[in-house]
Structure formats: structure tokens, C-alpha cells
Amino acid sequence: MALDTGSMRARERAWAISVRQDIGLLDQIGRTIDGPFHLIHPTSFAENLLSFQRVLQARHVNGQVYYGKKANKAGAWLRAAAMHDGSVDVASVPELVHALANGIRGERIGVTGAAKNDDLLWLASRHGTTVAIDALDELERAIAIAKQTQPLRVLLRVLAPTNADSRFGLDANDLTAAVARCATARPNIVLDGFSFHLDGYAVDPRAKHASTLIARCLEARALGFPCTAISIGGGFACSYVEEEDWRRFNQAITPDRFHAGKRFTHFYPYHQHPTGAAMLDAILRTRTAMGTLASELAAAGITLYLEPGRALVDGAGMTVFPVQGYKHHAEHGIVTVAGISMSLSEQWKGSEYLPSPILVQRGPPRAQRAVHAAIGGSSCMEYDMLTWRKVMFPAAPRYGDLIVYPNTAGYQMDKNESEFHQLALPPKIVVTEQDGRFVWRPDR
Image (cartoon, rainbow, N blue to C red; front, top):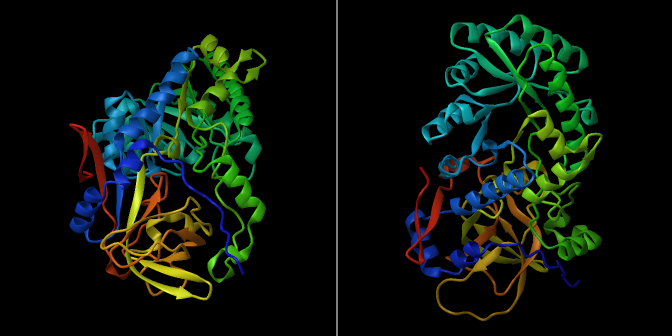
């Protein structure tokens, strides 16, 4: 059987190509770490953040871009956000403390998540953050804490009509009750607006639901609330591969393209349009009953909050695994790398990270005969596979080579990381340009 896995070459930014082709730099980092590691590039994060901010400015919309911190734990993103007038979305006490410690002021922090505990609500109140309230009992606890500290700014999270089974958000009855309770809780609670979060990456539902929240703000203002903001959450699309490669892959996908005939029920949509800041622009340009969403926001004097995570770290990181061994298996090879697949999180969601990994050859030259191979981790588990797909490499990987997974900063690096087998977690290494060359340091 001929193996034809098709090209799934990742889109890469210039910094990423330069770094992975700098064998001296990778060799230095690799010898120092002596195991897998993540490379992160805060300059790319800053470029992504600025692109969102430019769209808001171009559409004359007052807005704040909150980095959805759950996408990646690195502190470098927070410093970049602080330096470029960004905000941060957190959902735990450690995340809030980490943001504060890296220069994000309390008023530029949004606190989201389900059923926030009292410690998080207390710290949020002390630092003047905005808290998204998800349930009536949470609102009662927030009121009690605000009475002990200082007025707490809140957004009421609305259950999205397109996802009625979601466990997040207030339904119509609870929303009415929450607004009434905020009225009796003044001045301890400041109702600053409403929020929602939608699954998927569609433009139109986000724009339409945002328009309904603007109307809710105007109604609440008539009751004496400031209601100056709405949040449309995250879900800003990213494209990892070219459209033609993604189309061919989906047309030809069969179990024989994967080790052991592995079957998958779903993949992330690795090519999408529009993406990132262009998707925000499309949302703002969507027609509403009052014109466009952008003009409706401006006319109502509403500040737009958005919470991209993956889209802000798109193109800003890669993951490197040292090769520990290679063997032939039936009609393809098996590469074993140092580390485990929990450091590449997609596999642990019952899916596969599809952008093709790249072989960096080290040591003496070898014959360049192409091989197809899957990639496994160094644990004793059969399912510890970083890549089930049979990927084509220019030569058989060997001990000491490096396997580079491109564009892994968004949810791949640390969402499911584990010290299984007492293996150290792969550290994050910050790479920056200095005097025309790349330098590196551990992330703080």
C-alpha cells in the first residue's frame, strides 16, 4: 500500500522559521534543557494584540482586548499585554495573582468562569476587576463580599440562545431576577453590562447576540445602572494550514493514514476564514437593525470587551521534542521522543494535532531517503502518541534529532501537561531578537 498522507505544512511566521533553522540556537537550548521544551515569542503576541486594537480604532469602537489566559500560562504574554494597553481574562486566584504580578492593573482584569469561590471574588473586589456573574447564588456571595470590601463591577453573563443546554449563563428568568437584585444591592454592586460566550467560530451569531446585549444595556440604564460595556467572549478563529491542504486532507482521510488504523470523530478546523482581527472586523461590520454593530456600539456609548486566547498566541510559539529512537513498523516507522503527549494537548481531547511536525537533523550527515512515521511519547502507554498520522520525513529520525511542532502556543503547550513517570514538565523558553540575532531565556 502506498502511503500518501498529503501535505499539512503549517503556516509559520518569519521568526519561527529563523529559529528552527538556527541549529546552533536549538542545540544550545536543547543541551541545556536535556528534554522537551516550548519556545514562545512575545513579539508575535504583541503584534496580534495590536492588530485587534487597530480594528477597534478603525471602526471607531471603544474596546478592550482581554487575553484569555487559559490558552497558555506563560508570564511573557502578560508582560506584553501590560506594555501594549491590553487586558487579561482570568478564572482562578493563581491566574489573577499572576496577572497582577506581571503588571496588569486590576481595572484591566476580567474575572470569568463558573461558580467562582469566595477567595477569588474577594481578591477581585479588592483590586477593582470586572466580574462576570454566572448564577444567582454567585451574585449573592459577590454582594456579601462587596459589602466587606468595596463596590464590585459586574457583567451578567447571559445564556446564549444558540446553546440553550449550556451550563453557563443566566436564563431569561434568572437574568430578570439578577437585574432586580443588582438594583437592591446598590451601591455595593455596579452593573456594568452583560456578557456571553459562544461555541464555534461563526461571525453572524456573535454580532446578532451582541446587538441584543446593547439593547439590554439601554433598558438597564433606564433603571439607573451605568451599563457601559458588553463582552462577546472569545472564539476568534485561527488558520494553521493552507486551505488547499486542509481540503485535500478532509477529502482523503481514511484510517490507514494513521498508526494502528486510529479513527477520530472530530478535528479542530485547521483552516478557517476569517480569522483573528479580521474576524473581529467582520463582526463589527455585520448589519444590524441600527446600521452595523460598530455604529450601534458607538451610538450607544458601549465599550466592547473581547476575550481572544488562541488568536492572541497564534504564530507565537512552537514545541520541540528530542528524538529518543526510531524503528520500522509494518509499512511505516515509529519515532519515540523524549516527553509525553500530554505536552501536546490535542491528543488528550480524543483528537489529533494535524499541522505536520518538522524534523531537525543533528549530527553526521545521513542518506536522505524519505520515510513515513508516527510519533509516540516515551511513556509505557500504547495511547501515548503525539502524532498518530503517518507523517513524511526527509530521512529516518535518529537519536539526538529534534522534532518541532509548529504553532503550539494556543492550548497545546500546557492545558493537559503532566509529570507522569516523574518526567519534568517542558519549560517555556522566551526567544527575542537582540542586535540582529535571537537570544533566549526561561519564562518567568
